[in-house]
Image (cartoon, rainbow, N blue to C red; front, side, top):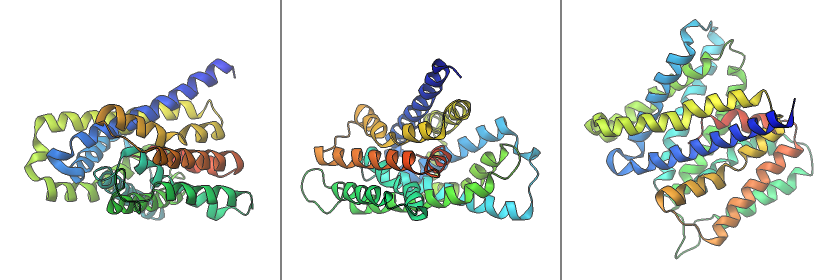
Length: 294
């Protein structure tokens, strides 16, 4: 495999991360109209329709046991979407993603038997302290927003663990099935909170753009790139998601972070990349989960 192909594949992964975070920033711009719950409902519904049309999941044969895993997989994905948008409404995007990435990191650290990984755990704790809402004054974070981000991290961890079981389903239609199941959670909550505002044509058009940027296009890019790069390189690039999210929030929404908060984000990136490089199981976990993020 040539270096050029690896570089192009790496560029595709970076592009997918940029699209995901631009989609997150655009989604946040809709919050004043339909709220975070409404955006989560529209985004997941649009993504489910797109993925169903492309992947045609009705062709996938599923056992009863796999159906149970798919149910948990989809509900964790729906919960992650609702919670991460609720966090976006209260704290900056980059901070939200930095906190949320604790989900896959926790799986890596809790399943590791290496004393070396204690260093990464310490860095995670220190980074979260820098992002802590305990400080007062300018730049202080909403504790509820941080709580939603941590809850989203827990859903992300469940998504990863159950996703390994779901991966046994033949064909790629399981992704479409999971997103459709997610709608069973997101759509009722979105309708209950946003009501008729969800039918606004301009809102629907923007939600379609968000679904394409946050789900459909990144999925295509990542699937084409994963066959050409190592899981470690994939994981290292994915680790940069909080910084990309912070930049997207700054450019599109004008979100500004304090220097200490940037240090916390950088610390989470280093911890995530470190786990990816030093643990054989970390990169697949990070890579597998990223398509459902934001």
